[in-house]
Each structure stands twice: as C-alpha cells, then as structure tokens.
Length: 311
Image 1: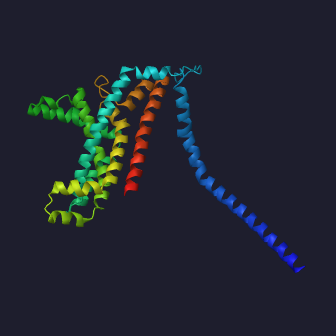
Image 2: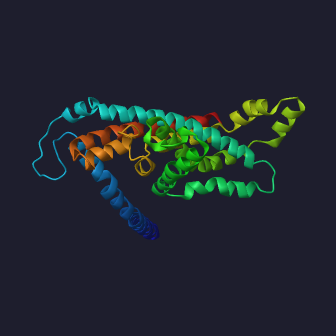
Image 3: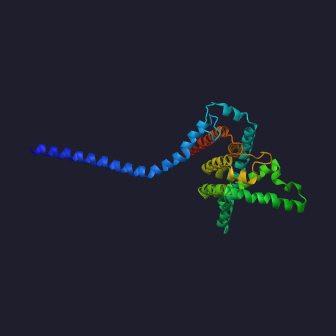
C-alpha cells in the first residue's frame, strides 16, 4: 500500500511540474509577444508590406492613382534599362560613390591620427570635427548652396578667379561640390570609428618599430593599417552605403542640375515618381536600387565576419 501511495504521489508531482512548465512557457510567450508584437506590426506596416506591394506594382501599369491595374511583366524593367536618364544617374552615382568613399576615409583616417596624439586640444578637435555630422542633410545642403553661390562668387569676383564663380551651374564643379559636402559631413563620424581602432593598437609596437629605425609612413603601413583592418572594413562599407543612397544633399544643393547632370540614383527615382508621375517605372527603379543596396550590405556582412574569424 505504501508503495502505491508513493507512486501516486510521484505521478501527481510530475503532473504538477508539467503544468507549471506549460504555464511558465505561456507566460514567457505572452511577455515575448507583448514586447515584440508592436515592433513587428510597425515593421510590417512601414517596411514589409510596402516592399511587397512595390515589387508587385513594378510588374504592372499602375500610375499611382487609378485602380485599373494591368500586369505587364518585365516591360517596366526593360524600359528602365533603356532609359538614358537612369543609366546616366547610375553612372554618376557610381562615380560619386567611389570618389566620396576614398575622400571620406582618407580624411577621416588622418583626422583620427591627429586627434589621437597627446595634446591639450585633442578633445576639442574631436568635437569640432564631429559636429558637421549632427547637421541634417537638407540644412547642410542649403548652407553649402549659400557658400558656393554667394560666398564663392563674391570671392571669385574680388580676386578675379573665374573658376570660383557659377560653381553649381557647371556639372564638373557641381560634382565636386557634392563630394565636398559629403566628405565634410561624414568624415567626423568615420573618424570616431578609426579612433576606436587606433586606440587598440599597442603603443609598444610603434615604440619598438621607432627604435628599429622605421619612419612614420612605415609604421602606419606595417603596423597601424593591419591592426585597424576591422575599423577600415566597417568605415568602407558605411561610407559606400551612405554615398550610394544619398538623396537629401542632392536635392538641397544642386536639385539634380544643371540639366540632370548631377542627379543621383535616389533622386532620379524620386523625379520619376513625383515629377513625371510614372509610378510603375519608379517602382521598377526602386526594386533595382534595393537590389544594389542588398548586394552592398551582404558583401559588408561577409567581409566583417571574415575579419572577425581572421582576428
């Protein structure tokens, strides 16, 4: 009898344990969805659903207003790749991205070298160099538009330097104007990433190399560069992504002019949708643009993981 009572008691204990585990899982699940649910709903509403609808509309003749939608297959994509304006904007975006990435990273690296030296004003310099990043793109564009149009013209006229006048009315100087504003805004932010990398370089290595007779460039090339490779990878793809997706400075500074000569891909997409009212073509361009950005992001993730494994 006593053994039977023990078995009954054990079975009751196991049953109660299972019930408590199920109750605990239910409570954890409720807490999980309480926190994740609103974010997931907002993400689906703002990102996921528009993405799916955008891909669908890129295969239709939708004009953004009417409800009479017809399936046209890949006709929109064929039109996009045959569009001279799209190809011109894509080529301009590629050129701008390459020049901006190089300029930003070179400037940011040497700024990081400057402010990591022992100096009384190093913290002040860090703040000054980082401050342009706090200014919004549209405001920054209008500020530099005033500088290029008014200040440059006044200085050019007083000094007799014609190259300083009409800076934004020329496609070449307009291009360099956009590079300048992009580098001025992003260099301080990327500098912070390089500072973090430089502070992880053991000073003993530089001191030993200096004793062995290595000059400053040799120490940077053989010690600093290899040690900050993860920082370089992050900075490279960060500037690459931001430069490729640039829109607000393009809108505020040049508005794509003169004659769409400085029109970035994102701005060309905007023009197609809201100036020319060709929503179907704009959606096709947006999908292509999305694919480019995804490729850049995937390569960035791969390179970052590769650096982590090698480290």
